[in-house]
Length: 186
Image 1 (cartoon, rainbow, N blue to C red):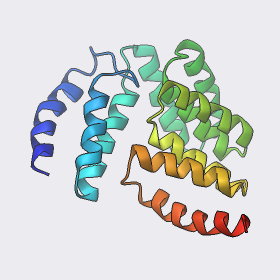
Image 2 (image 1 turned 90 degrees about the vertical axis):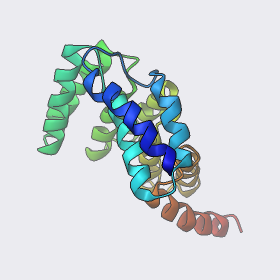
Image 3 (image 1 turned 180 degrees about the vertical axis):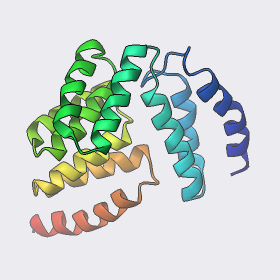
């Protein structure tokens, strides 16, 4: 898409060069434009680029403490130290209860620890703060798939695709789950 290059030329400097001074999270006004572009792109490569920009905005914070804590969370998760990540995330959601990405990361860690009900609760909180959080919606689909609740999994994946029509795994799961749910209802 021709317009994508122009949008990125304007957006990237604002996103990355001014990020330390800017307030950004799920309420950032740049997200509306990015979600419009996400629906307008033609290729998976373009979609991945816009998705990365959205994730970048969701992760930004004006708080040095929050930046430090989220950096530690990412490091702990990368080292599969999920209990350590969870401890840090408890602090993140306590000091920044309106920061959707803190709730989303904690939902992910809960899932990885097999604590599915707590994961679902944190995903729902994430979605209350940022209904367009396609990562949380896809994660919810994964949780329900794991719990063998096919109808709820299908609903979550379909909601994710309404927000981000470029989620390949969600498309695959929707096709698979539609057949299963349809068969279950016979």
